[in-house]
Image 1: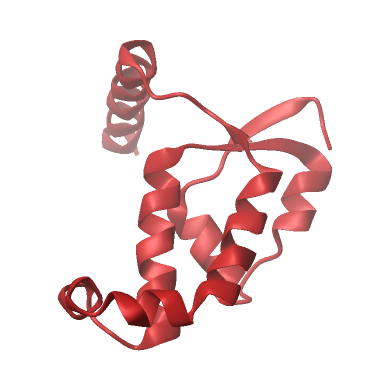
Image 2: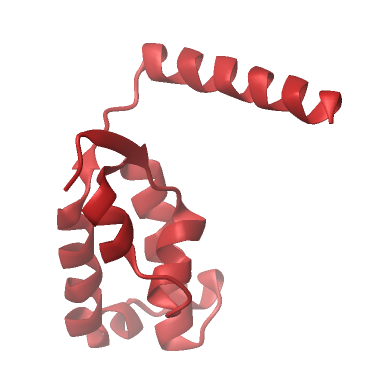
Length: 109
């Protein structure tokens, strides 16, 4: 685990789950960070993938979620490798500033 921190967004975790990339390589270089919003998105995408159902179908059939308890436990265990970042006003403002910088840089290309 490196001294540098890296925020890991949902698309990176989903790519890991699909076998397209290995988080352990990132983990060797960085302390990996995430938050509850990322977990929520990954959880829903993962749940839909392992059940083959749409969100509204899962909402109407909670037994489908219960049946996948073992696989869901693995997802929860995966999230243990991340440092959890709290979401607050300061974080939102920082995100906004980073987005503005990114957009500005893209416009300069």
